[in-house]
Image (cartoon, rainbow, N blue to C red; front, side, top):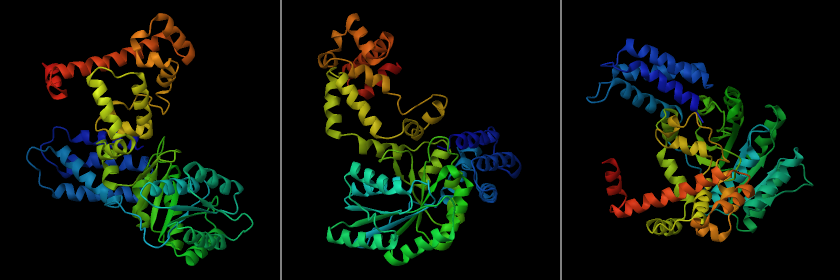
Length: 440
């Protein structure tokens, strides 16, 4: 996400290296490059120009801070302006009402149905009792899709396949939620391939009838500037409360995330980063700005780790590591917890400096596939006692996992290296002293 933009903006700042102060002359080329980078990332040209004009005004008027070079100072100004451009601060959902009603809007293919399920799952973890409502009566697969997703998440889904009236279905669902002590209703609506009057009239009637606390406009961020234009058309009719950007991963240029706020003046509340039901992030403008500028997002990384990692299990493993007893079952468990944290490439981009260092490395979600296959091809006793793995056993494991003996040997070496390192740390009196020892 935003890889190309980050790289180009970082390149633009190089023009200021060696400069003693910020002046109109020495930042002209840098601002031109930043504007070009934003436009290449699919940001509206007028917004990109206004952005660089604002940065220029603040940069020229800024006092140069001692011990901070002009490049660093300009990065700070650009960072602050990016945060403002994307909304300034996180925007929370309004969750009052009994039940809370959230209405989804957007074009067909934007990811409304999948996001509805993701949001229900996200809020269920926070103590809500959600009900998903299938109000897309035109796309036959929509109702089935929502039911399948609801079943996988153990979240009830309300539908009325005999009715073709979304307003009636939504009102029946709200009554059902009250009767069954469900305090959150998420209404998935129909989409079209393009904005049309019939679609707008229908969702306007839904809004008037059910009076939702939140109306979320779901948009596929891969559509670039079209996403911004569609958002404006929906907002003119619905006055929605927030935006959800889906598919903000892979090759997405990300311009919609930067310019949509300026056009509709409504906050981005969530971003979808994949197909998995937990691939959903709250949108933090300040964190996104840091990622765009290649500074990483260590706060989000830590939050994901806290959600995925069992603290009791972590303590148990720490004790085993200290005693050099860490085995392949433990290794497999750790891989499972890392995978729960989400897309590997996105995780790496959150670590300051790592995104740049790993930009040419092909990090795929199935990066651990061979490692898992090797461990799963071992017998339980071999996982517990890696010392038993002789040549004959390694050959059997390689054949069973579809890998080579060399790959099996590499994995075994990694395990023993981890044990050796932990043993060294214990001998030296803990990780801090060990690191000092290694430096010496």
